Length: 293
Image (cartoon, helix red, strand yellow):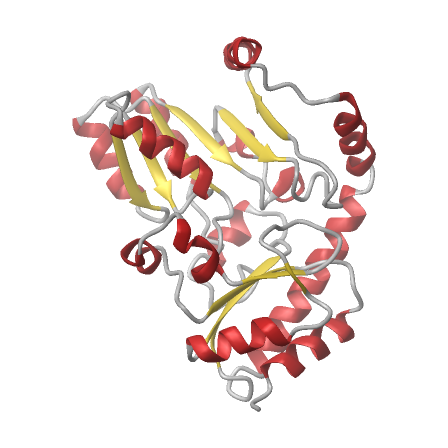
């Protein structure tokens, strides 16, 4: 039995759903903040795996990792955390009770949009099982990508610090001008308006380099998405350049309208992975894109 605290990365969700559809596992999909529901399932069914993300994409929710770790410990389950958006500089789930942590190193760890890689961390016993699986299926990082990743890790701290400074300033800029720019909500864990603001302050060293905002209509969102000039329209994240994404359009291929609504992916929502550009230039680009015609 797998408990999946959604939303999670769409490919991960597709894999687990496919395995469940083939009868290879039983899958319970719950919302990230619903720790009580996870506990209730574990009380009545034999849970083998609890899987969640910190931070989630695109609404940047923060699961209560210590509480989930306690549930996993009480019921003999494994807690698996995807910490791609947080990176080890913001959150270290293994110290909070997680058993395995995965990262898409393609994103912030690589940081330059020039490699595809993944990382898994955990106890020697669990990593030995992962390594045995990798040897059977042949998923081995090539030497050049490994070199690129090693190079990038040397600058992760300075890159991410600048990205977080920019993200904080950009979130405040958008919040202050929300009415003027037809913004319904700004989503950033560093803002007091975020539903997990207090939990984020407790579990994360800093609030991260991702933010999202919902505009008052899909038409305004689509127009703004097409009008940006400095931000790149790319469905990725963690790059040194700022990237903007229109989740409702991109994820419609893998999520139904009902699922999009369930995960809070409104038709007017835009997501930004904030880069290293001058903050004044980023603010000016968004303000120009969001101005009424």
